[in-house]
Image: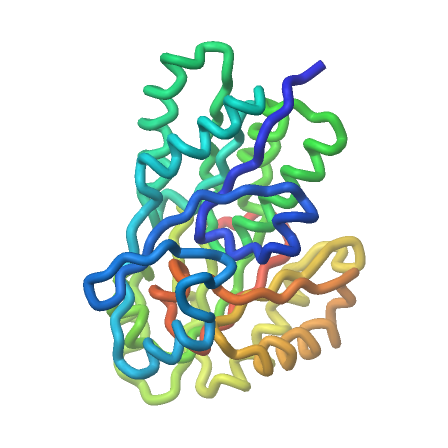
Length: 293
């Protein structure tokens, strides 16, 4: 019989407590920095509410972020060791964060004192609810009795089938974060042009086209989902948003006009991803053929 294992994500997975509880998923907190003070990047918004966080950004505050600190990983690994469980860590995309490298370093040292334990770190090549979706699928496979190695291999074999489409409300936050490929060159300073972002084969956020007007972008990308999704009736549509719930609901209705998803989960974009993409951003995730860009 396979040894039990914990599924661990981090603050970029953007899974609310409801989903973390339902699928028994834990997370290691990154930090965000506001006015030179660090706060844990809680997915439950314990330091600032989502509205407070994004209103601060709207007011000109710059949010800086950190990866998961080494002692946080060590504490999580110790909790699992105390329960006699292994750890499957599903990180933020390695193209966007160095957290997986820190986790591997801490794990290597930790396992010297816990030789009977397994800690497997997997790069999902995506973040936000794409990362969260992969963690949910891992939980389902765990419930089916799959071993930690089998689940890790499944993720590596299928991670590029998770598609991302994102619509960004304001280019300045992307420019500040510097985490999007070729955005400035691609879009320049065209007024009211909204960049459409996907997650590419390297796990980077890639700007693939431009659409004038935010609502127009939501309407057009609903057609993109229709063209890319496989068997929507058998899967959940995941939507994350940066303090724009009405837009999320509008987009859900627009997408499901053409693609009849089984259900839809809507969540806030957490503090780490939100610090990069900025208020008003909205992203959706679903399954399709393997991403090739």
